[in-house]
Amino acid sequence: MVRKIVIVTGIVQGVGFRFSARREAARLGVTGWVRNRSDGSVEAAVQGDAERVTDMLRWLRTGPSSANVRSFEVTNVVPVDGEADFEIAD
Image 1: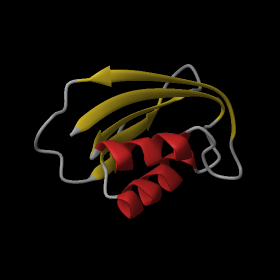
Image 2: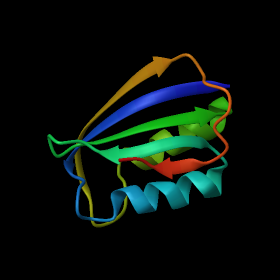
Image 3: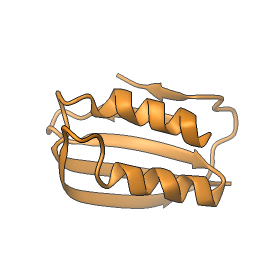
Image 4: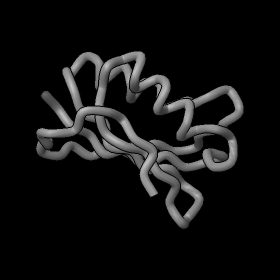
C-alpha cells in the first residue's frame, strides 16, 4: 500500500478535473480525495496498490481532455488506513 499527494497546475479548475479524477480512481480501485486549491491548482491524495497508484498518477499528469496540465508535483506520504472511497473534498 502506497500513498501519494499530488499538486497539479495549469488549466485544471472549471474543466471537470475533480469529477473525472473521481471516476478514474473508481475505475482503478484507488482511494483518497481530490480538491481545488485557492491558487488555481488541484491537489489529490491517492492511495492503494503501487501499480494502481502509478496508473492514477499517469492519468493525473494529463487529466481530462478539457484540462491543460502545466506542472505536476508528487510527494510520498505514509499510507492512511480507513479510506473506503475516492472523494471530492472541499
